[in-house]
Length: 173
Length: 120
Image (cartoon, rainbow over all chains, first blue to last red; front, top):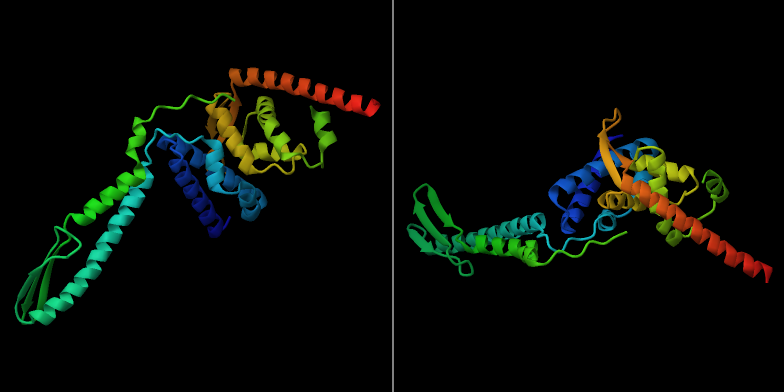
C-alpha cells in the first residue's frame, strides 16, 4: 500500500464516521465501526488494490444508513460543533475585514490622534485607534455577536431538542 | 448447500432475492467458521455470488450484530489493524435454522408452482 491508499482509507473512514454521527450513532459504536471498516479496507486494498476495494464499498453515506437506522432521539453534537465553529470563524473573519475598513477611515480622520468606535452590525464590539510617531496601535474587541452567532449555529445544527423525543419501537428482523 | 452454490456459479442473481437471503448466508458462513467482513465477502464471491459488494455485506453484518445474532471479537493481524471476527450466537444459530426452514419451504413451494406450469 502506498501513501495514496492510506489517504483514501483515512478519508473513507472519516467520511463514514461523519455519516454515522449524522445518523445518531453513539461515539463508542462509531469508533468500533470505523475501526472495522479500516481493517476491511486495508485487507481488501492489500489483496485487490484500492480501486477495486473502493468500487465494492460504494458511498459511505449509504453504508452508514444501511448499517444503522437513524436514532431521532440523539442530538448531533459533532455536526453541531463543526457547524458552530465554522460559523464562528466566518463571523470573526467578517469582523476582521470590517475592522480593516474602519481602520482606513480612522487613519484618514485622525492621522495624529485617537479614534474610538464600534462595528455597526456587530453589537458589543469596540475599536480604539491610537496614532503615535512611529506608527499606530489598534485595540479590537470583537464583542459577543460572533459568539452568539456561533452558539446559535451550534444549537440549530446539533438539535438538542431531539432528546425530548420518545425512543422509537425497535424493529425486528 | 454446496451443490446449490455450484449450480448457481457464474449466474447473475436477482439483487432483491439476494438481499432477502443475505442474512441467512452470512449466519451460515459464520456458523461454519468465525470470520471478518472482507473474508466473508471473498467466501461469498467464491461460492458464486460474484456481484455481491462490500457495501451490502458490511451493513448486513452490522445489523446482525445489533440484533445479537452475531457476536464479535478483535484478532490482531500482522498485515494491518486488528480484524473484527464475527461469531455466531445461540440466538443466531436458532435464527439460521428458522431462516433455513423458511427458505426450504419457499423453494419447495416455488418449485411446485413452476412444475405445475410446466406440466400444464
